Length: 275
Ligand SMILES: NC(=O)c1ccc[n+]([C@@H]2O[C@H](COP(=O)([O-])OP(=O)(O)OC[C@H]3O[C@@H](n4cnc5c(N)ncnc54)[C@H](OP(=O)(O)O)[C@@H]3O)[C@@H](O)[C@H]2O)c1
Image (tube, rainbow, N blue to C red; front, side, top):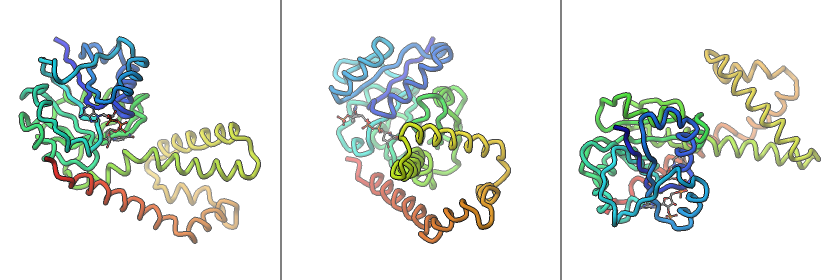
């Protein structure tokens, strides 16, 4: 019998998951029969209905009797503090709970959903929507079988962490990674436009440059970033002038501090007491 998956809180990341699964529907529907969504916001539910039509099924907590085998917690970390006791009715001891809640430790999730220990803490990013996501996980129980990772493998590359210790750092690198990248592109685009270049042309050459660079990095996996940079930085040249300015303005320190602040925020979100 095929399983059913439930997404609780279907905002940006919940719908990215659905997009990724539906892109691979041939594989998805071999093992899964339906995608269910439990979404608090009416506005969001209407948007999802319009986008996915009959491809997803909505449930309401008060009139649902069934138990789900796969449950994704995809609401904001602060919402773990709301009263979720009734959500335990959706689970049994076979349910796998996948938590996407930044900063929330496995034990916090277990405290709210004590019914089972089959919890997987995840961090991922929006490229999952077209199956190029990065997914890092840490499981409550040490052994995780292939079936439990099927839904994750469909949407990107999956990596297991041996300890939960570094999860907040992983959250910045993986979860916030796309935003870091967009911010860099946004800054270059702004400068180029200020110099008079056409916006759509800048967009094209930026995409091409960074897509090509990403592929080049993959092709030179054994080389480190510093060597790759030095390889394209001629002495006395234009790139060197640009990098010199970044160094003088302490670019690495800025990145270090922004990661540090993000980790701090994850700890604050994580430490807010679960009622
Ligand atoms: N966005 C990213 O790129 C990203 C990347 C990695 C991980 N994450 C993690 O993914 C989670 C979701 O992020 P998001 O950006 O997708 O958030 P989002 O767009 O705000 O979506 C969350 C949705 O869940 C709903 N919700 C809240 N409490 C609920 C409940 N008890 N039952 C059912 N629905 C509920 C919210 O409704 P209301 O608006 O009415 O509250 C909202 O529509 C977060 O924990 C975040 O840390 C996000």
